[in-house]
Structures are given as C-alpha cells and as structure tokens.
Amino acid sequence: MKYESVIGLEVHAQLLTQSKIFCGCSTQFGQAPNYNTCAVCIGFPGVLPVLNKKVVEFAIRAGLATHCEITRSSRLARKNYFYPDLPKGYQISQYELPICANGYVDIDLDGTSKRVRLTRIHMEEDAGKNIHDGHGDSSLVDFNRAGVPLLEIVSEPDMRNPAEAGIYLRTLRAILQYLDICDGNMEQGSFRCDANISIRPQGTDALGTKVEIKNLNSFKAIEKALEYETARQMDTLSEGGKLIQETRLWDENKEQTRAMRSKESAHDYRYFPDPDLLPVVIDEKWIDEIHTSLPELPGTRRSRFLSQYALPLYDAELLTSRRDIADYFETAVTIYPNAKAISNWIMGELFRILKERKLDQQLYIKTWPVRAEYLAELVQLIDQDKISGKIAKMVFDALVDAERSPQTIVKEKGLEQVSDVARIETSIDQILAAYPKQIADYRGGNEKIFGFLVGQVMKSMQGKANPQKVNEILKAKLSCTIST
Ligand SMILES: [Zn+2]
Image 1 (cartoon, rainbow, N blue to C red):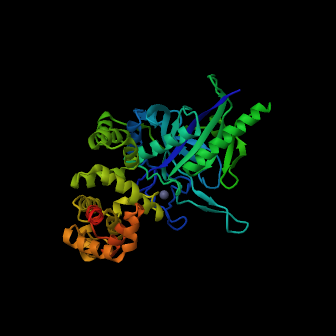
Image 2: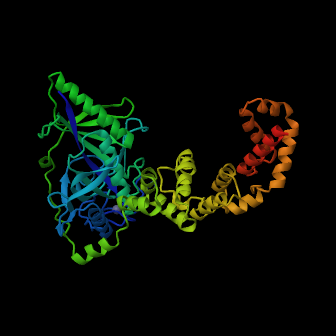
C-alpha cells in the first residue's frame, strides 16, 4: 500500500519587542541568568500583568500579512500545567478566542503555488529555561525568557511531504522578518517549530493517528525528523502494528525520534479566561493604520524583481529570501543599473563571505562593510574596463576588511586595468622573444600553448592587462609571425 504523510506545523516566533509581554523587563538575549526579571515575570503571588500594546500590534501585522481574520475582541487565557520553568503554574496564552484566525500562506513549489491554510495565530508568553548540565546533581532555572512575547502560528495539516514543510517554514520566516517582528534566528530559539505528522493510504481523506515531534531547532532537523517519522509510521503499519497519539523528541545525534509522553488534550490544561486581564478590543482605525504600514512582502517582491529587473527566478528567489538582502540589492541597482551583474556578485562573493564568517544566519547586512554603493561602484569599474573581473575579486576582499571605496583601493594598490595597446604590445613582444620553442609548438598545431602565452603576458603585467586586448593582440601577432 502507498502512503502519504500529512503534516501540520506549530511555529513559535519570538517577537522583537523591547520589553516583555506583561511587564517592563527587557527581552535582551544573552544577559546574565535571571537579570531580566521582576515580580511579575517570576510569578510572585498578587502581581498584576499588563498587556504590552506592541505585542498586539505585531500579532495584527502577522495576521494581516497572512490573510487572517483579526478578532475584534479576543481573550487571554490561562493554560495550567506544572514545570519548574513556569513559576506561576500556568502560562498566559489564548485559547477559544485567538487574535487571528483562518489565514493562509502561499508557498512556491518549483514554480507552482500551493496554499497552506493557517488555523490561528495567538499571543502568549514564553517560559523560562531549565539548565540541567554542568551542575552536578542540581538543575538551575533561568527566568530571563519567562514572559518574552511569542506568537504561536498554527497551520492546517496541508503539507504532504517533509520538503513542503521546509519550504513553508522558510516562507513564513521570511514574512515575519520582512514585517520586522521576529529575527527568525533558529539557533537562539527565536523561531521554533513543533511538527504534527500522520500518514494515510494515498487517495484517502481520513486522518491517521498523529504524532507530535518536538526539539526541532534547524530546518535540516525538521526535514530529517519528518522523513524519519514517515518511515517509522509506515514500518509500524506495514508490520501490522498500531500507532499511538504521542509526543516524540527528535534526537539530533542518533537521527531518530523517541517517545516522550502520551499527547495531552486541550482539556488537560483546564484553560480559562485570565481574570487579571481585560478582553483585547481592537478598533477598525488601528487595523487600517497597521494595514497601510505593511511593507511589500517577499512573494510580491519576488514577482516585481522578475519583471522590473528581468532577473531569472533563481536570482529573484534568493535575493528576496531576506529583506535586508533585497534592500541591499535595490540600493545598489538604483546607483548603477546592471541588475544581473550585481545579483551575481551578491549570490557569489557576498554569500560566500557571509557563509565563511558564519554570518548567514544573522541579520548582519545592515552593518556589512561592503556597502551597497561600493558594490555598485565595483561593478561599474568592471563594466568600464577599468579593472578586470579577477582584480575585482581582490578589491572585493579588500573591501570586506576595510571600509574604503573601490576606486580608492584600485588607486592605492595601482590595480587599474591596462588597455593601452602600446604597453600590452611591448609586454607581448618580450614574451614572444622569451619562448621561441613554445611558439614553434603553437605553429605546429598545439593550440593549448595560446593559453600559456596569455598567462605569461598577464603575469608580466601583474594581472592588470585587459585580457580581451591581450587575446586580440597576441592572436594578431602570432598569425603575423606565421604568415611571414
Ligand atoms: Zn518582569
């Protein structure tokens, strides 16, 4: 029997607010343990939470960008459970009335669009963090993260294989980054994902027994875990076994999932409206204001890049995958409109350096030393035949280390391309005189020698000769020698 997987994802996105969701503590990452805490976020009795307005605004931004209905009067609810990182004994979340519902995200599968429906987006507070390693028999708790605002974005089970799940997550992350409400950093846990997966015979509609997978902290882990789980569930069923509804943990080292606990149902949490917090009532005017302030989103921008700059789909996709890179590209193109060349430099050299310096996960490009105007200038210098492509790469590397314009670097290091025919001829004559044997070989029909001779000329001119001119003049001289 052929099976297909049915995948739904729950994303937790940490919001880029300055302060926490119900108190004034900072949300800054990397502080000393328990530094960003107060009586409210460590759950002292009798304290009163106050909802951060920015969190509501960010939730509405996310909802509008994903075509959700915005609930005009939503509620915050207590989700009751005990865990050492949750000192109140309950998490403030939303339950029966989430702030956003019934949206969708369109994802691109090799040129065809697929719609992934969103069930809901709700606001909630994050828990603290238990630290079990390195303290002997003791465990420690750090409450800096307790009360940091999250959006939980729940999709319908609309994905049919692990690759689709990966594309959906990348698309969603790009949208949140474009909206400037989440940095999308998976390593630091500001973009996390739990996956629900079941399998069913292909061509049937009924849903199978679903398993929730936790502890997925990279795109690679998510795809691998879903592949593993699909295979495990198929094996179980084909051996006549039964699947149970449970939560499983992904083990990165063993590359397998293992049972963690049987899955709780909503009623286990005894949700009820938080009596300390008022309903969240949103007026139309505010929604309109937020709607007008939305930026151009990745899908729209990609289409525009295709038509406005005549870029291939591959380029447009890569450049718009991050808002900072798309902005960088557009700034450069506005200064010097050779879009394809600028795109090539970004996808090649820029991405190479970001990867080499392990900066590709960070929104670093805002402080990138190769400013967009410098890249534009560099491409222009090549187009004007002032430097060769090879020299341009040297200039680019120099730009990464010191903030100066390409023109300055070219002048300082004397890298300007030599197109002067007389100077190139002199150099070619010297080379021809130095390699009589090779020239005889070339005459004898060994055409590879030509490349060798070009190399020698370039070397004698420190790589600065215009290669096209060298080719032309050398060819002319060699044919001349042959005819005489
Ligand atoms: Zn606090």
